[in-house]
Length: 191
Image (tube, rainbow, N blue to C red; front, top):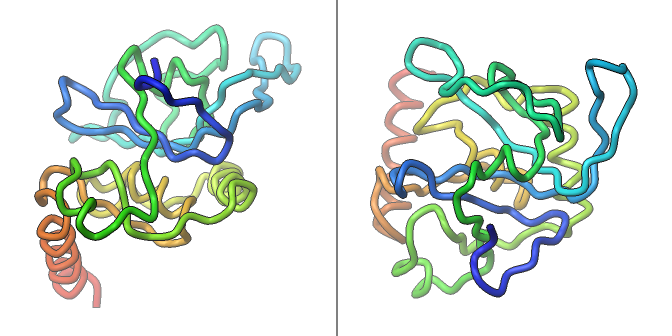
């Protein structure tokens, strides 16, 4: 369910709090989309589709196992950039809209992983980027800290992959800590 008073529009960056708010799962709401029914081989339209980036657990397997979805035909072993129905995306949790162009003051005091001071691209550009990553299934190797679903959604929205979720703190201090850590690990592991 959407948070009170919010209506989804194609191109929205949405997120859902998972495991009691331990982390957020992010994606791009694209509205209507076509998916292939594996039983009939025909394309079918779903009304509320989301493109998002799914990662692996520490053993390189899907985090949860669920049977194939009857709406979008997604199977839990399908990872990387995927298109699913809204139900598969939020898994019964509340859906929130990620905010863009918030003031630095608001950014400092809002929950990490819920907003950005960056400017969002137009919805058609956002959707085009998301579909491009989906068709190429190429957003790189999943990394909890440096290439996750929030990176994917902000890349689609702004052209820049960003993440400031809870592990690095809230607002400006969290953003600074994240960028320092990312810069350090890039220098350490990638020349």
